[in-house]
Image (cartoon, rainbow, N blue to C red):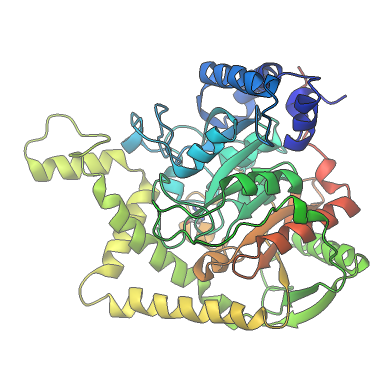
Length: 490
Ligand code: GLN
């Protein structure tokens, strides 16, 4: 039998239900695993061992009363920008190093009600700005498949923790690819839901019109279980949508024969895609063909403007959202200010790291009088064109198959001094956020060096189900997701 920490959510659930294991045993196994491999991976910012054990005890009591749901007693990790009542929520920033929220994010309220056990808060790029988790103010998380490489970002802690079995599943957030890209780099599943599917209440805002919370998981069934738990309308988030949530797990076995998959002309064999990624995506297309899917070439002609539009819109919104960290209300404050202006300047210079400051300057510039029309307004117009590209594509296909990132995980340090190279690596993920559509990343192959490569499936608004169903059947037909990174046993 696999070790308990190596279980998927649904495997552990089956054992809990049959009372072959207890939630406390399961949680202890995961906490021991964290102790053993955290020194190698550095995925966690805060480990909540004590709380986890008492939540597991409560789960065991519920189970003994016959009250067991899919997440009861399941140890999960949470990206450190999702507010957790009484547990420090840092956004991997010095600015919030000592911030303990007095309330839970809506997704935490849901997970707690579902009986889940939180193992801790995991690392990320500061305020979710980045693609490698190297922008954390606290530590660099390492890719479990190659400790000299990045896990991707910004939800790199979530992806690495899932890949290294330091939790059974995790929550991340995705503003321009931050769930899908680290999932791809770490060989796990990640899903960015449709904008409005999951409440953003209690998610520390980066770019409010792009941010969504979603799951990172060991397989598709687990991602569907987590989606079932966190989706749905929330009156506390005015942008969450009141629309029925399907039973994602029940829909996984739906027939996909005749499914039409769009291949974007602009993504396929485009410059910059490494042969490793292209080979893996071509292989995935073959698997879908054997499953009875049909293919159609589609065009997303405005893709070439996605990076430019995103890197105006996201910083503009970030600049506005981060104005609240001024040293007055909460968070870090510089010591011994000589006056108000000095306090503001020194607080924000010392509290924010270089990438966050770069974004605030970029965003403030793009929104300033005289430049607004040329930059922010123009980028918003391009955003509409990108959304229309997808609307047109989904008239002739059900889902779109694309790469997640141009290359597998890159070495730590490679792009850190070249922000533009880092931004360009987001080319395949940004469009889904600009359009608001859902996107899923699932393991589909390995590079010649043995690094995992993910495929991206993009779907129509609120059609997470088709993404999950297609990826589930792919998973059933292959064994790629079963391969694990080799870490020291204990
Ligand atoms: N890499 C992108 C950025 O740096 C996306 C980050 C995200 O999705 N949070 O903005």
